Length: 239
Image (cartoon, helix red, strand yellow):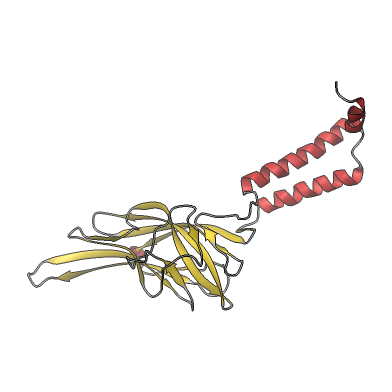
């Protein structure tokens, strides 16, 4: 049998101060859903939709911390050459270049090309190989040779290392890359993120860290708190 003392406690009116706090928490949580880019527990995430194409005739500069100068430059290139036998071969490539001091791109240690990471792979000081300079992500030639792991992939992650004020940070960029039969590359950058804690790692695809609720969870929390407060107020009016 339910303890009647418990019933008396639950039927008591909610103190006005507590109700105001509940409403305030709901508003703050709801406001957090509107913030962009997302910034929680050290991870700063920016959603984007940028296409890198040869037809643009210019590179795409990624400013991963959305401040100051860009840290990485992406470019699609294409060319051809004639062999000594009079045959012409075409080639296409997708490349990325770290622009600042200490910048790097996560790579296969034994391959010398940018790695195409799966979601949740850890990016940080434990990565054994970082590349600087003009780093090849993927390339293909008209005679069928193909290099790298960024040819016709969907939602793969590029591990990134860069500096802010001389301090090292780690992040990622998410890309989908298409290569057609003429060896033309098109890359779609759909988002990027970094950890604003100096020297701390990040997992590919992280938009939050440290157990902080994702935006959808935060929305449920906001709605739940607000709904609870309004229900309490309605209940009090009918008693």
